Amino acid sequence: MLIAFSVTPLGVGESVGDLVAEAVRVVRESGLPNRTDAMFTTVEGEWDEVMAVVKRAVDVVAERAPRVSVVLKADVRPGVTDALTAKVAHVEARLAEG
Picture 1 (tube, rainbow, N blue to C red):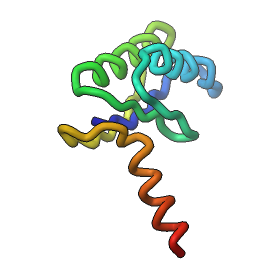
Picture 2: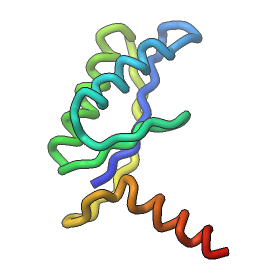
Picture 3: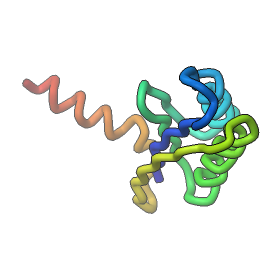
């Protein structure tokens, strides 16, 4: 499965980048395939392992923020692997065809 999520610390002032970086660090240290862009971090793996990573990312932010907002989107497709790169590669191939 793929989970795209964002974690936003609330009540810590305008600059939240340092806390968001801590959440991304949790994801990267998980060893699961992942990608971070300006809006979301996407993680690929089995349901329990991906959700555990999301929970740890939220928990690390919650240690320093009185409130945390989480937006999450999931693509659950049993038996599919490498969706993190394969989905993008498919679109790129279609664009290259003209």
